[in-house]
Length: 311
Image (cartoon, rainbow, N blue to C red; front, top):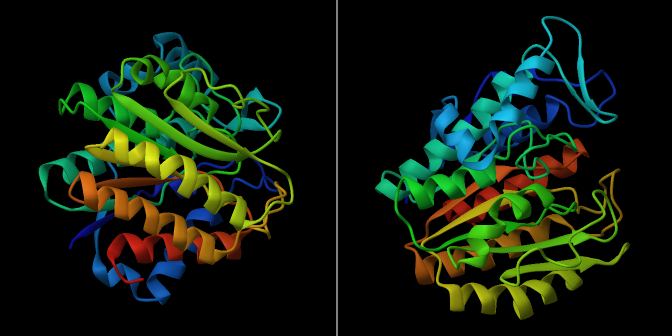
């Protein structure tokens, strides 16, 4: 079984300030961990292309793209919000992060690889159709889902988000596709952490499970076993896109959940089982959050272990 590993140098060039938690080292520590543990030996390394405007505009408005281009600085920083800034390399990095998810989707659906993990940044799941926010500029997961539907002609795509923050942008962009039955979104998140919504889903066909602060992995496992997996099995996805955030870890400084590396291994096992049952194992996973560097590296490593079948 071949699993693709996507990254791009621009992921290391985007930064939002010296002390910002969403930093280039996030990509470095994951790459170092996968290399040092021999996991990349079982993966096909790919350089992420840049997403085309055509692909981006399936998910985002022309206004947002224009605003990002206008805010992108020649030097220094351009401000999106109090926590989200652009340096001269940000937009290029966001385009390549989205391009990684797109190319991974192409390769998985063509049978070149069975699964893919995209170690790229910036993250994307907070970016809405008309608004960048929350460290996010372009919504890579939503862009990939719509690419699978519109370009590859899939009828059912599942998007799974286990980041500690609600994927408000993904839900907003894909609401209509959820309503018409082409997309099923399932997620967990700490309530009421940023962005403070998600308890009431935008679509009746979206399953958001808010988790209480200080709850541990058992609460997540109950949500997945009792709510996600039955819905996914009924939906029978032809592809699963994963927004893989690792900031629900007990060591993460930006949240208050108590997951461990074993929980990330377990949740990935459940997703692989669903994928094996319904869509020939096809999963595309793209990095979202995770801000304690060592916990991020270890947790992503457990996630990748399962994707490559080394668990």
